Image 1 (cartoon, rainbow, N blue to C red):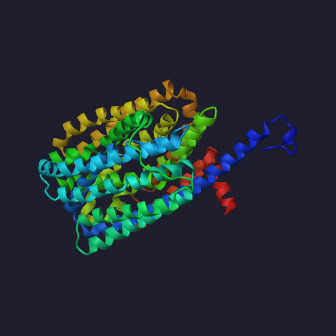
Image 2 (image 1 turned 60 degrees about the horizontal axis):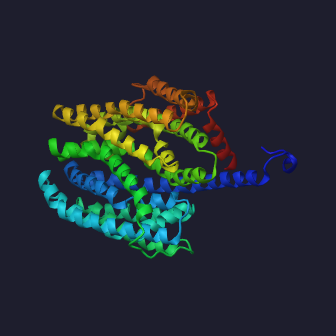
Image 3 (image 1 turned 90 degrees about the horizontal axis):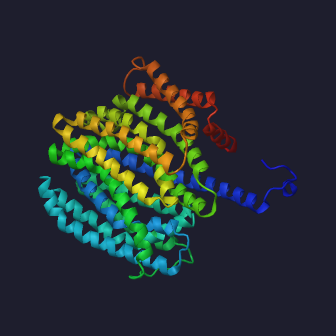
Length: 494
């Protein structure tokens, strides 16, 4: 809101102009990133509905266990190269080539390790079919280094339109290929084969769409700078994945693959929010926070505003998901997945506590506090593992309760970091959160009012969705939430 005489009003004209351009770029980047994420999610979601009816829980459990192992190995494989490329203040050609060389070494080395341990792991979990699936997925480790450093360059330069093209094409191949191969009877192999085909496409498209002035030739020396960043980044990523995947290991070892499949299906619905919102948001916010840390006075203002927007969407989403799970799960996946319903509701309750800290890790990395982010990831594992091991003998529901209850302690550690490291006071934090809390409460009260009278099945879902949407908009208006201003702006633009 600049006055007509703004050049003579004492404002720093170049700074004001740069700020205006920055805001316009962020809006454009978010629009591209979210559009891409929504389309990818729609493709993956549609494929999951079909596959859930083509595969049994036991077959799905085989693939889930294989992907858990691959995800953990992938956390070590990447070695934080993409993150290093995005946040490096002085990215010279030599440093970029060294990052690429290190990526090749770790990726190919991890491919060999995964191939060698697949057999013993399958024997340990008493699931022989897991080994060949792991071998197939390990092919991705050989292919990914040809694209990952270039993808980091695309994100650093904020060329999100090109990133979106690559991501959408890969999601199309992976989703479509999984369905077709499952239909042809390839069982749990279908998703692994489709994953490799998608990675091949990513490599080809990344080289075609890379920035014109970027030419990477892997260099196997000068690793010190990349290694310092990558060590903590890799440990942090590995601990994050371990915290997420630990229930799968416990279930596969102490229970059975069907229980693993039910838990994975419930977690997949919770993860839907990450695919809907966080995947698009992270693509933009990480480079943006890093740019602010390099050039601006600080990121706390942007971080708190982003957290306010995020909780205004995430809290109502989780409330709706918990309330509609009894009708939603059978409708989406079929009656054979009914055991996932209480797990979805329990996991939603635990996730409500963690939503306010979804952006915290990105801010810590952007501001050079990678060690703190790693410590938080380690704390999450420490809090969750004992609960899982102790409660696993008491059944799947009790194990899930323990996993969700650990969120209380994890949230407490995140808040301490908020206070001590990011220097954000309780007053400022609460000021950012309370409007979203009221909005979520409005949605919960609205759904409680129609509980039991909305019918069942798709009719109940329709009624609950309409009530939730009305309560959400009413809540945003009551508290004059800043997110309402964004909605009005988008509607006016349309």
